[in-house]
Length: 339
Image (cartoon, rainbow, N blue to C red; front, side, top):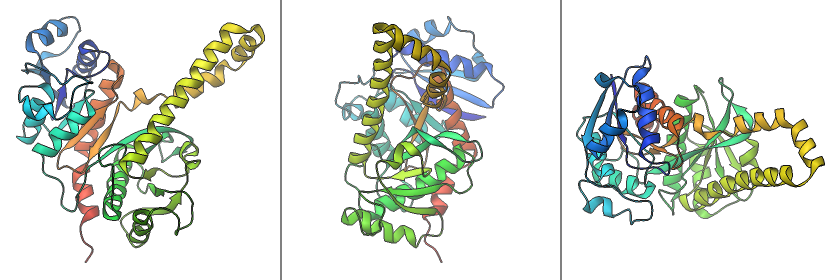
């Protein structure tokens, strides 16, 4: 069975959301076994509230957790915190992949301290899925992938090339897309646009045969979904990701306000309800659950901080799929020097 270690102590919705998502997985006909890390008495008490298969679940005690507002480096000092215990299990080979909805920085810090990087990877990359107008791959996914979104703030050209290879491998596995289109995020589509690192990465990627490189894209191409994978440094990616999340929330709030204020607006929104439902479905990141922290020799899926039980369940399934389809092996092969 594929063994997934889950940090139960993270996430904005608290421990019940994580436990319920785990309980759902144990009831499904999937070859997944869960190592659930957190305060054992609390986990055991919470698990009793949800129907689950105890034969596919093991509770592992940790006596503390890293709160969202704490310094992520504390994870290295508190050896008994949930993310540190979970990462150690991953390092020791007790698990095949890790899932956490907790402190992103603590997850990155622990992974960097405990796990070796894949050959050819100098910097890790945190990826994120985002909703797009166009659909991608044979499954017609309404999402594309962006990386880095926060793990490596300043990326060299070589780092960006590594991100491109890793993002292509992940998109290929998760979306069943044999040849994802990959692009660099820049201030113009021309090859001579962008920072020195982007221009050098463009030249390097143009010569790389292991991925389908589509050149540069601009910010307006992000929601359009003109490519499957967008590559940038972590500073820019994090700003873009937060902007996309903010715009989505503002649009939702404006629609609610309009519905409450004016009868004609309420009537119009009612008439558009089918389209709004489709938009909500298209932008529902919970169906993907999480996104990967790439570059290490183990699979790590960082679930969204606001993950509910459904999102946690799907993050676990994504992790298992990445293991079963040898994500790290594909990245290793993509970064291997060409003969």
